[in-house]
Length: 88
Image (cartoon, rainbow, N blue to C red; front, side, top):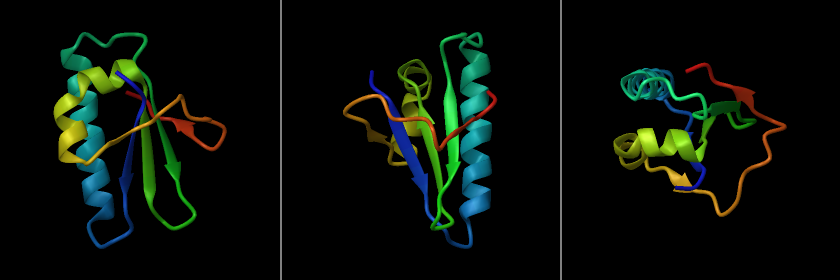
């Protein structure tokens, strides 16, 4: 599986939607036995949106979340210089 990007746009439910996503992602991570290769990153975008990047290993754990949050597959590994690690 490839890297995936999930964008949560700025609106009145952004924070609640982001919190629900992170909670579900962490639950999937723990249920999979907390694999060391699984990583995720977050960027608070300039347009007040939140962007999450999921490594291929994390994307595999979160297949249902990828569909629910309309994830986009990345053609190649993203540059992570503008992202902070998201503790799982």
